[in-house]
Length: 373
Image (cartoon, rainbow, N blue to C red; front, top):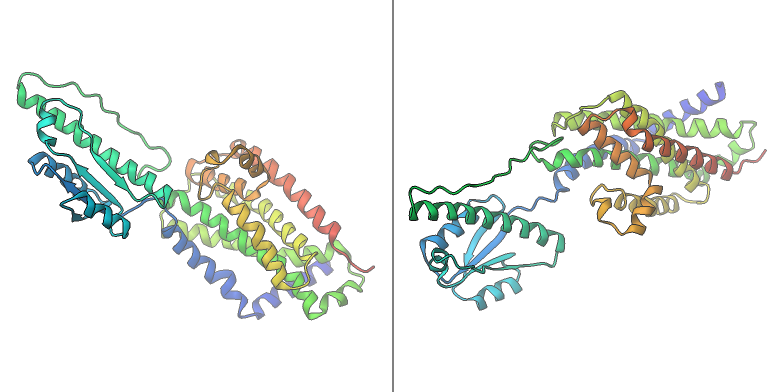
């Protein structure tokens, strides 16, 4: 026990003595949390919007005003002819072009079907899909209101019966995308910092030549590993604490569930990451090698974790592979506990899988570590 405490004390002194490491551990992750939580969003604003109005009537102008009133569109250009709008689209000056046909208002009064031309720059397919939803909703709302006005004008005694759905949003009433992203970004930061630091720590001992000196001492293997990794376990828990405080103060992220449950799961999850870092360090000789290998795996884990894209939209084979992704379980649990108020029974499947992952990963790391007896 004294040996473990000695190694832990040595590691903490070494970490805090390195002035270049402290900003990496504490300052940069916090900046990343603030920046990424604001930048990582699927909302699309300031969409450059142009239109070709071939009708020039009150109704066509009213439709354009609906787009002007939207916070998503920037109605900046009007084109006299479709050729000019096509050229502007080709040059990247507009993202969306709405073409209103001739006799638009007259055909509406005659109950004819009207086809509106909508051209969307779809180089970014995901953005184009979101823009199409925005446009469809605005046109549907305009069409519904216009139908009501026409019926009332034609016959004051007849009022149409409208069926209107009233949505009830659970867990994120304001539909604030930051509420969804902040827990995931926090997972990302805890994972990356603990993985990189633990992976490079032992490799650094190899580079400066102190690892060989430690290997020939009578220190037992598990004493050495616990002493080396425990400080980074503490740092990971500290990053979680700071991140939760910032999430509450800056982003007003709800925390409906138990903080103790979050810390309990995180304590097990960090063991997975530390075991992974140790396993990587056992097969690398330089810090650069450890960094590149760790980055290779962490990018795959992040992209397949459901942090930025829904797992349900992935191919079946990719969904199967996500079952071996520890970051996926951490993202799910952080969102479940913080936003839904889930309890232990709700997260039990992910907790058991993560615990098994921690046992396997650390067993492999300890087994692969070579110490001279």
